[in-house]
Amino acid sequence: MPEQKMDQTLFAKLCKAGKFKEALNLAIEGHEDEKFTPSRFAMDKKTGLPIFYRGNKRVEPDETGAWQLAKSSKDWG
Image (cartoon, rainbow, N blue to C red; front, side, top):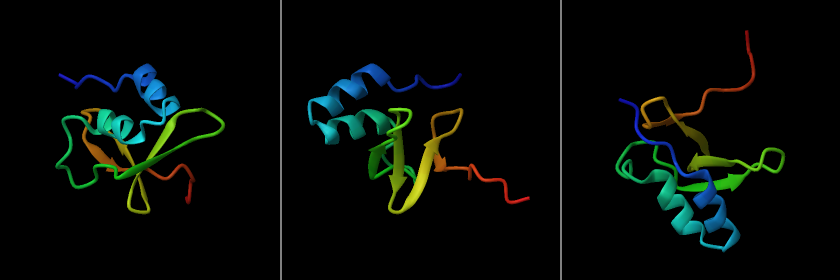
C-alpha cells in the first residue's frame, strides 16, 4: 500500500509564512533516517513545486515514498 503523499497546500502555506524548516520536515515526515532524505529544497520558478536536494544531489520520493536520487531528465542515449 503506497504511503500518503505530502500535503502540497500546507507545504506552500508554510513556505509563504517563512517556515522553511517546518516545510522540509513535512516533506520528510516518516522518512527521516533514509540515506537520501533531503537536507534542503528550492522552489522551481516555472512550476512552483519544490525541488529537493541531499547535499548537492537532487532527490525525489519513489512510488513507495522512499527518497532516492532523482533520475536525470536528460536523455544521454
